[in-house]
Image 1 (cartoon, helix red, strand yellow):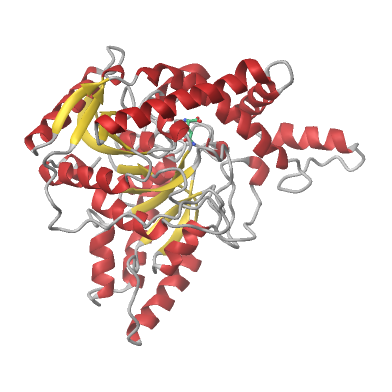
Image 2 (cartoon, protein in one colour):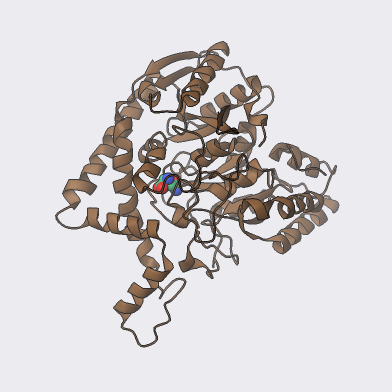
Length: 487
Ligand code: GLN
């Protein structure tokens, strides 16, 4: 079996109807990983043996006449900050290098119940902090379109793995853009669900008020199918939403006519790469030709997003990462006679990387007495403004369309200044701050220094608006072929 261009739907259908087996599908993908991943570095850990056991067990059940689940035999890679019981979960950090998950995330449990095959763990920026996967303690991931460039981050391993056809689907997490931005850089589809749509149980917390698990796939119809499986209320996550899961997309999808799409004027900046702005305009024309009512709107809080996010995110991170102290979790400094305080300090100093430390310090500072009111409380007030503006705008339009990232994938080392890296998140962070849904889909290419690189556009929808958003993406993909381009 060839793995190229295989969708989640086509694999599941072939396994369900007995045209192939889960084992054959898995072996083809393992071969592909073997051939390609030493160059790309997407995987921290390929779980070949446990995946083979899962595939064998499913094939035996099917042979006995059982009805397989909706993701039958689909190999899925998991970002290394989502726990699978008994498997390592490093979160891209030395401090968790030898940590083994004692329990299973709800998201991966749901994939198992749908008969997907969990095939391995993908590299990410340390604790999901970053936009390039350069902050992974175990080595960078390379962009399959140009291996001198980053795949985006923090879920770079998951995105690159799908783009290079190593897997048809991978899970990522998105706190400020970590699914949408790497999807844009790698030319694939990535969905950040509404806050609460997918249970966060078993996702290692970075900033829980904004963290969401979501899928990377080749197209929106696959994303809808996977999201349908992942979604739902979970008693172990109090913030999970009691709402019916998004529909799977059917072939005879109703047309889009009458859908109101707004393009935030603040997102079409002269600072964007011109081909990025052009891709948004062309996507707008496609939607207009599909009968949508497309107009320019204002999202004036856009400029507040980065400042707000980089106060709230580090504040929550400083609290969540306090547990990695060398006593309860992970790596402990080898200082048998040290005081507890010195042991904490040494374990954290040697176990955590520069970006994680920067965020812990920033977060501790904005929460400290004397600065809390000036920074953290004010960021919460800005959060309310951003939220309220989205509420207002989604009374006026159904969806928003704009760039995912201001520019295409950059070269390794070119954003060494943290602030310049943070600015890559300008168009993505506000969705997490407000808790709405968003996604990136391929919508063009650009040529930089002789390399062809993909461009993504972002769709944003209201809270629990995934049906509308995924449908709009599906119709775009029916009308265009950007999602079929390969590195
Ligand atoms: N790039 C953003 C950050 O560094 C987003 C990360 C994420 O979504 N996990 O925080």
